[in-house]
Length: 134
Image (cartoon, rainbow, N blue to C red; front, side):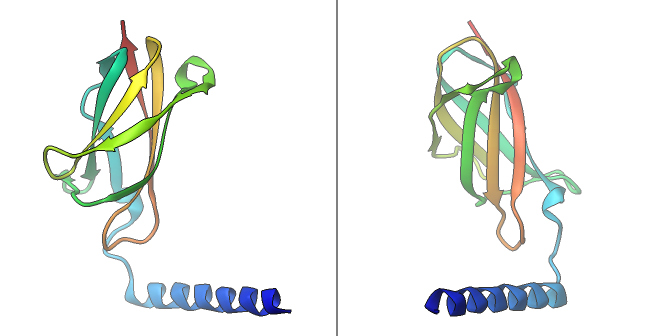
């Protein structure tokens, strides 16, 4: 019985959030943001991958996003199961996000990112393709 009441409470809270969100309105849409690779190619082995988060309407970099989802795999070469660990690193400038990874093979790698932008609802999601060179 408690799980039923908990589920109803969660449902009511989500409806309230949706109503409040529609009344106040968001400044922009998460579709107005995108990640872009700083370099399209990196050397195979231990690599630093840099991306910028851009607000597309004005071209400005977006600092302080919270990146919570990352994946790096060889999907472009048909090997989605060939994934590697990716670790965030301190950025050198606002709006530029860096990651450390070991690219075990030369070829196409897909970087999948999910992030929250301060003041916006929804999630910015992008899949970027980079090339690991020998």
